[in-house]
Image 1: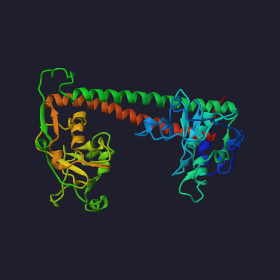
Image 2: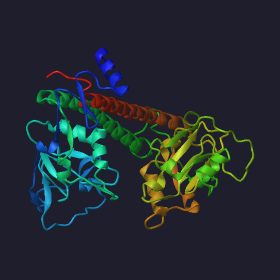
Image 3: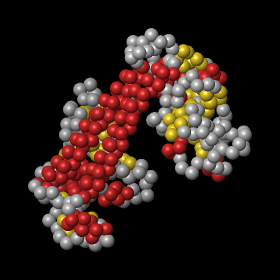
Image 4: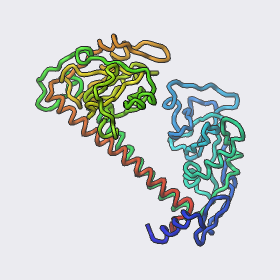
Length: 434
């Protein structure tokens, strides 16, 4: 970063206005930037249609503009008297109500016009304000979030009608500088997009490998193990069951225990917990409190209730956890290994197979919440090869899992850098030449 930029940022940090800048309505901008209401540059689009066969139905979400069939588990629309709002390709739309004062503006990049709720405003921008720059500002700058909060006026929900949006004022650079800023941010987006595409490809590769390597009759075997046989055993023959405790996290931590909650398992995408790495200053089990189920290295904790069939088969493997006062909370089934037939890392993967999940779904009962009893869970079968093949399979899956984790972290870091750069560019603290 150039010296003059660092000095400028330091002046702002001290609460002062740098030379050549203006502070107006709590917004800092270069003196040659305008400060204007965006309604001057917004062009509303008001075409409505009920032709749901000609145009796909979409919804404007925080993940972007998405097809309703992808966003919802069921198609939830009815024809309206006035029709759905048409969003041409390249136009902007947004959900006009929010519970937390955050609004997400989405550009239609789906390659075709789409239909959204008739309540969603649709617009583009006129000459003088670059649309991509505007969307970057509205989606990321705290000044717009503050403006949204001011619109609540005692209601539990914030409504950002098009007329209110038009009243928002922001710093607007000269047109050529707008284009350069938009180009820089678009380059950042492209880097993230390419990384995201690579990540999705790696995830697909991992899914394919798991479908093939964890099933003995898939036709794909690790080299050197083509003729080996696999064993089939029930959960009851592989594990003994511990009990969960009906105490809160605060109660258990007050007693010096770490608490493994239902939500901790459901949110864990790696399917294991490295206790030594993830928990500091862990109290050690001294043999007291025999009524508690303490978790150790290699133990597996399953969920016994969920709102969907996929959740009913979620689990975590405890790694580097010997001697910890680690307690399982409600709706969990702590499992202690009876023997060493399953290697530590193979446990990360063998319970993720379609065959295993299908059995869990078969035994699950309930309407809105599905549950599985310990007795039925004990009947579920697991297939697995010998130790050497387990290690070979785990090594392949561990390698691609690590690759995926690194890509995920890289995408997060790039996103943070883009956000920091965006703050500097959209406030004019960093100037770009046309």
